[in-house]
Picture 1: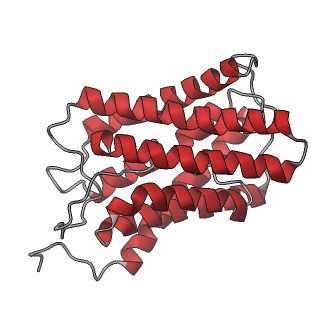
Picture 2: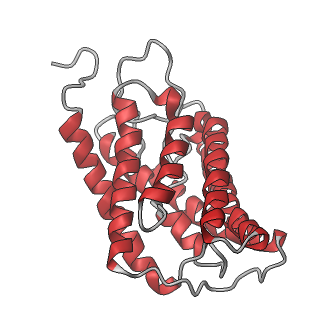
Length: 252
């Protein structure tokens, strides 16, 4: 759900965020994004199903769901970050493209056009896989309406915070902490945002394919995705506002 590459101890240039190693072929990077997003959604949906089977306490269900997501996301970022940047999230991919659009080594339109469909396909596949593992209907549209205005505000906050965190880590040369920091943020945002922090258009689409604890009704998708895009833009604006004192080495 974030662009994470290994930052060496002597790194001084945090712009743009986590440029993918040119030695990694695009096919490998796209495969990492597809598999990583699929695994992330399988964790989110699967742990939600398991939680509802083990307890009727909604608080405990959310605790189980958020805990599994924290650990699963951290592991996936650590594993796949060196390959693709571990975006797993179209908002992060678009934000990285925007911040690095003037850098010839930055993420280009070709990579964006490959990453985002892979993320969406992976998210749908992950939801179907989770349903299969728990004997649910493989595809059953969610009936969980999430169209209320306060939930949409929660998505703006959740996504803006995520983008601010990821790109702030890049600006301060702390991307090596991303697996822990990003996973911790998402775990916290499960609880402090009204929407339980989807913060990811691909994951949101995938969760529409399962009528279980983590699902979202298809009619709620446009609102959630629109607010996530707004949140991503707001997050980049906050990065520019807060971290303008950070300049690349040698910049005038």
